[in-house]
Each structure stands twice: as C-alpha cells, then as structure tokens.
Amino acid sequence: MAVTPLFENILDFIPFSFLDFRDNGCMLESTLNGGIKMILVTGASGHLGNVLIRELLADGEKIRAMVLPGETIEHLLELPVELFYGDILEPVSLRGAMQEVDTVFHLAGVIAIRPGMEDTMRRVNVEGTRNVAEAALECGIKRMIHVSSVHAFRRAPHGVVMDENTPLALDCPAGSYDRTKAEGTRAVLDAVARGLNAVIICPSGIIGRHDYLASEMGRTLLSFTDRLADILVDGSYDFVDVRDVARGLILARDRGKNGEIYILSGSQITIEELHRLAQQSAGIRVAKIKLTAHTARFLVGIAQHFFYWLKIKSRYTIYSLQTLFDNSLFSSQKAFRELGYRPRPLAETVADFITWHRAFTRQKKENLKLRGIKIPRAKTARGSDCC
Image: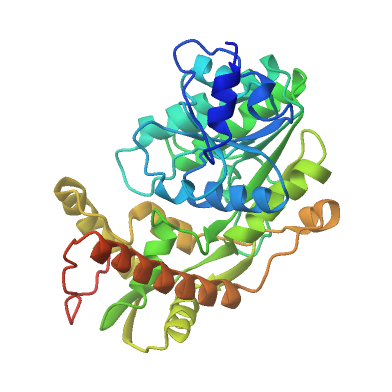
C-alpha cells in the first residue's frame, strides 16, 4: 500500500494514527515513521502494557500499540504512539502489525482466577502466543520478548526457592492458568529452536501506578482502604512494582540471552502486612479479621458457586486462595546477574500506587463535572467481603 504525500502531511498534524490491517495484512511503508524501525507491543492497553510504553517512549523509541477493537484505550490517547487494531488470534492481523518492526514485546494474555475462563485462557495464552511467535519468525523480527508468569513453573514445596530451572507446569490440570502459561512458554521455546530470537520473562504479582483498568490486585489494594472492617486470609505472595517489570523487559531486550527465561520477582509479603502497608499509605486504620486456611477454603468453596451464577466478582476464589497458601519463594538472581534488574521496596510501590490512584480519581471526577455528569455520592459505610 503506497503512502501518498498528502497522507504523510496529514500525519504531521496528529500525534498517532489508527491502523487496521486485519483484512489483508498489507505492508506499512517506512515513510510513516521516517524509516525508523518500530517496536510492537501487544496487550498495550493493559497495566504492564501501558507502563512499558511509557518507559519506551522515555527512551525515545517509536511504538506501535496493538489493541483489540472495542478495548478501553483512553489512557493511551495521550501518548504519541501508533495504534493498531488487531487480534493475536488472527495471523494475518499479526503480520500486518509486524511490518517495519524489529522488536516485539508480547504482553497480551488472559489472567483468570475465577471459573469459566478456561477456553479463553487456552486460546489467548497458548494459541495466541504461538501465533505471535510464528509471525515473528515469518517477518524476520530481530528480537521477541515474551511475558509469561512465575505461574508457568511447577509449584514447589514450602521452603524451596523456585528459579528458572524449576520445571514448567505442563502437568497441571488442563485449562488452568498455570498450564496455559507453561504451554505458551513452551511454544516460544519451540520457535527459538527453529530460529526465533526470543527472551522469556516471568514476573510475579504486578502492582503499581497507571492501573487504569483496575487489575485484580489493584482492586484488592484499594479495597483494603475503603471499608470499615476487612476479612483477610493467612497467606502470602510475591509482588513487584509494574515499573520495575517494564524496565526489566527493556533490559531483557538489550541484555537477555536468546532462548533464556528470567524471573522478575519483588518481595514476598503476607496479606496482613500488605493490608497494613495500604492502610498506612492511605492514612487510615480499620478493624480486621484473619481467617485460617481451613476456614477460608470452606467459606470460599460455598460462596464461589453462588457468586459465579450471580456474576459477582469476589476477592477470593479457590484458585486465588491456593496461590496465597502455596509456596511463593521466587529467585531473581539470574536477572540480577545478567540483566542488571533491581526491584524497588514494596512499601514504596504501595504508597506510590495509593497516591497515584487518589490523583487519578480526582481527575476523573473533575472531567465528569466538566461534562455535566452527576457524580453519585459514596456510601458512608461499606460491607466487607470474605470471598
């Protein structure tokens, strides 16, 4: 598809262009970006995706952000990126997205802690990842960075530190999140064996600022600060700042070894301590009740079925409880040595997230007022949820 001089002039006056090559996968000529190779980011509208884009832009990179038609992308419109409407389940779409691109950051994926999403996870996390890797091979991409998860590894007994030598969770029950991330990782490694230059990154639980679409952990952190009483479970997990993961992805592009896996973890923390950090950052203190593992499993096992049929989102599910009660000791020593990865303290992350969210909420309210939309009054007391 030739780009006319008139089209080039139009592009001079807008900060981004909307592109859609799903129908024919036609080539985007280099006149659109002055001949400079671009970076493609899949899953660009997500939490990690939009933070990675901000980091790349700060480094002076040119970005093509791949988003699904109908996705919420308002938070991307302020950024000088090229938007490409496409779907990783459509190979033609991917080939179009990769024209004039030399690096692909593949972040698109589905995280589901509730039942009923097994087929979607398999299509996106396995088939979609395989499609991205195949398209990268076909298009001669110089380097692909695939974002997997620490859940791609088989869970080890308590006290055992898991690292990149831990076997992949390919023997988990079919359709589970862990297995789909493991199979997606295996698909990338298979492509590496056939010539793809790729690095695989496995982050732990991601939290932090620019969480515009309210991730599971973002909602959980905020719920710790907006109720009169809270019910916690006696569990723990490893959390990491989204900015550190984004920077780790860039380090992997620059320093990572082809075909290698790197864990990007942060700090292991109990849910009770995370609750305390969130409230300390918000300047509040509320009563709390802590459930034992046995009690939590019993209550959630009963409640989960009702919540599923009523389409109510709950904080805890059988899967999330299992994650909190399982071993979550992950080592990032390989990333420390080979990438120069350095995560910040978790207390800093939590405080920064609370501060950012307050500013974001104020701005949203001001924008609604300017548009003449009435803002509902908040309830003075909120019930706690245990499930």
